[in-house]
Length: 81
Length: 417
Image (cartoon, each protein chain N blue to C red):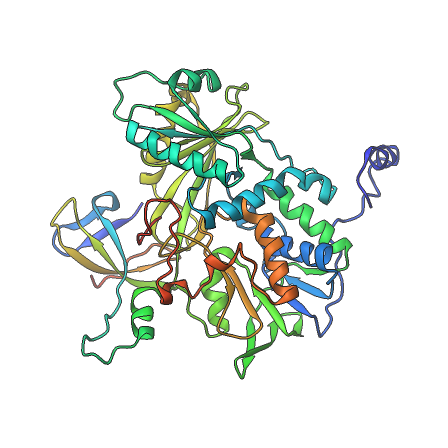
């Protein structure tokens, strides 16, 4: 069971959240973006065994997207929210 | 040694002291035609069919753990092919045909029991969707029936069909050729036949490097030495991303935890496999009398191999909706596996951008049922170099071309699992 450190509400049960996956940079919409850029941004994953910076939507609380860093091996959240 | 009544009796008279190990422990050669990275069901099936169908035996299977110690032995043993659309149905229905003869083919009892797979519908609309699916399955050469509540009650007498529930049951799609297979016997059976054919299987032997230059694969590095090869297959389930990274590849995969549970054993009460569709909870009873339960993924990236209580509660609450008597049973065991899942929830099978390097991954928690078919087709691909029709839709490059696979027959949409 994850106790997710919400910066607005404090530590809350994972059942209050919807998962948003790892954070990722979107390509700039400047006309120079290639298919490969979009492929990388939309589908390719680093999928780390270790710390992952990820998004959660606190649907059962403050209703905002939060960014946290969690270790995928230990499920420990790092201190900085 | 061929297993038979005679061999059983002979060995019994010798007090069972002379059974040979079913996987040999050979010396590693510096060169093989094909290296299969991952000695799970899929990898071993590929090795077996390369030998049996194509006569290629100069193959190394390198497994980081031991045979039958990975996801092949962590699933809930269900085999079925109840898919609406051709790509998913055709591959899994081919697998179902192979499952039915596999004990004879392997001379190893994999305990395929076609006890029927019952997919419950919870509304008239869902039952209509199931009817479309059943018709598609029949037209594709599979077997399927739609049962109304009365017929369903006869088929599964213990099922609680009382009305007034939050998710009432409206009927079911039943595939009688679906059922269960003893999962670790699959790994053992394929390993035994592959080993007997002369294929070298190395356990406790992780691949630490993959040598690529000029866009081609040249070999792999293991703690027991370097292996040169012209072709290799990555088939490592939950470790797909990490192993592909050794070759400099990034995959469209997230690794997610999936849990399964076993209750204490009781007398036989359930002779089929049931799936509850409002949420997800699938259940069957083993020959020992334990109920095996599983559900959806935990939903977030994890390699921890331990799950959330939230999902346990979720799966068990649904199971109790089907069978109220389960509420009095205790869970004896509970475990997790790491499932590698692509955006559209479907597998990645085929060529990588590196010449000679194939991948078979992204099966999520749906890989077991496809084991023999994937092995068969992947052996074709490795031996002949031409892409089998059954595998073509699962090309890893499908996201680039916009050909995402619709697994559930409800339109391809992201985050399917």
